[in-house]
Length: 212
Image (cartoon, rainbow, N blue to C red; front, side):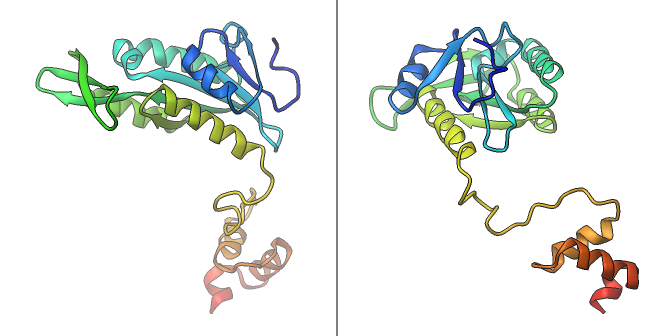
């Protein structure tokens, strides 16, 4: 399968867990293929605006096992798909332990969790890495595979809706403008258009002078 096809179909890498794909199949049709081999992330789709979304899923066990390997993979995705929107999805839960990090897993009992698979790595180091990579890609968290499927479905559906976008109903998206004073004036004066704002700044020089 090639993600060069310009449609909004959700595509899933063939190595993704059956748990996630079986849950997705209950709500949506999707295609399975060698996404990672072709340079894509684990999940990808085309948004309504025409931008391709790339979602790379990793577990806490994978991140603690080798941050360097995870970082190299994310770097490849960014280099090979520089025009796409990239998301790093971290699945699972981890807590600091006296001798390292404990991986938290759910049990068959509702709302009951246990700590398994302790690692000797420092949790602070993983948090620092997540903070840094968040400067380049969006980072989202899910506690388990079930919630990962729910998150992916919610993200995909949101990217296919034209109306009622969260915050977009209230916040006007600011496009690039060579004069930052124009953008600032448009931000503090809702309903003011770019042409009118440009004329005011041209006549008065600064936002402060316009407001005064």
